[in-house]
Length: 165
Picture 1 (cartoon, helix red, strand yellow):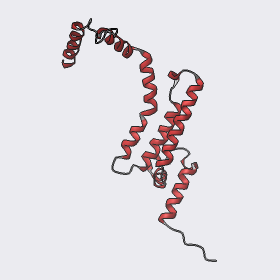
Picture 2 (spheres, rainbow, N blue to C red):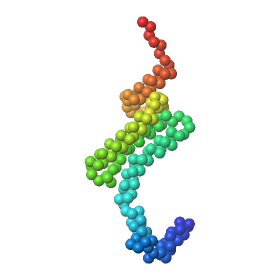
Picture 3 (spheres, rainbow, N blue to C red):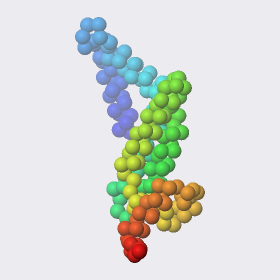
Picture 4 (tube, one colour):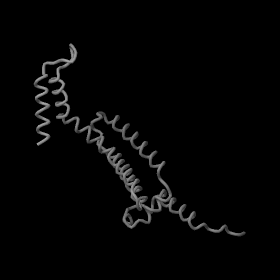
């Protein structure tokens, strides 16, 4: 109901001012309205928007999980892993040429890897390895990053005595 009233008010305002020009040579309010309307209704805009969202949407999900209370280390590890996968598979066809798409995919991979290297810790690796939610995750015991992190946590938690010679 309120949306309809608002839309009617906007249409009435445009109709009253359709021939008004803010400055000579500038488009009228009606012309600017039509330009924005055409932009919004253009499929290319929404194709580009979905491409950008496909790349960027996983990141706020990871950050939200990082701010939660509770056992989140393994979840952050898994979500960041999935975010990197989604970024690598994102549809960038709106960029045009294949070489430009490849260049952008490489840039996105570089950015997400740098972020991953910054935030990855041994505790996240241990959490990923020991969390029952991810026990069936294929390849995690083959991942040197996870196994090295787990080994480092074991060494810190249970220091091995130095062998006496």
